[in-house]
Length: 357
Image (tube, rainbow, N blue to C red; front, side, top):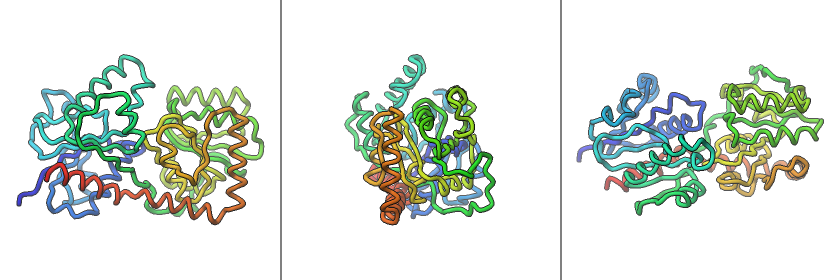
């Protein structure tokens, strides 16, 4: 029986620092550990040679060309299944074929300019119409999609992402660019408004014995707003921005922080809290969108962003953690381990099989 051909539109893998880049890479890595003998999987990437160097002959490789985003220059090779690995990808197959759409989030419905939002609405509706099946990375992503769009009557699946931290690194030689001589809270993510860093910075005005360290690319408009907020509130000796960090740096801060804070108001999933759980750190999340799915009953939640209230939740949670440290650390690590990319990859493979059987 000939192998079934599957095309994975994974060109976002070029930016592994982003959530989508991480998703693409970890999905591929998970798939590489499975028995793929019945399938020929082709990966789309601007630098396929790098993927081939790592994954050898486990996959076929296609070099991404930005022209392929335009209808006239779409990829014309026929595949048995096309997997569009996120909802904003403009690269589509030239021919009609089985089509799996993975939906991470539909934040564009609420948070961007009307012109761009209109284009993304149109793109997403076309993807929904094309879909043979749909996967979502959280129950919230599924619910939110159904609230805003007419979803076709096709098979739908929720497949949780895995934990990006598959191995704990030796961080003993890491040199921090910001002070770590005082107990600190930590968070990491993109500098966009929905991450809601302003709330925890404002909270820090009422906290004197701890610092706050925030990692991520702050060379953006929201990054400038955050820098101004820090300076205007006289917190420049207490709240520190590291900029982008390496995996070693991220693990260093997660390993050494007092608690991990993630007050985001819109998340399709939210990987950083899971990463912090790997270190048994107390987790403080907003109770918005998908985060309760991720944090479960082992995390602490803010239901609003009043600074005094946030501070109270934080220190109540820290006190509870210290009084039950061993038990809660074990619960956190167990929950982190339950999010596994090998499990996620095998679930995607089962979806491929369902579509192609």
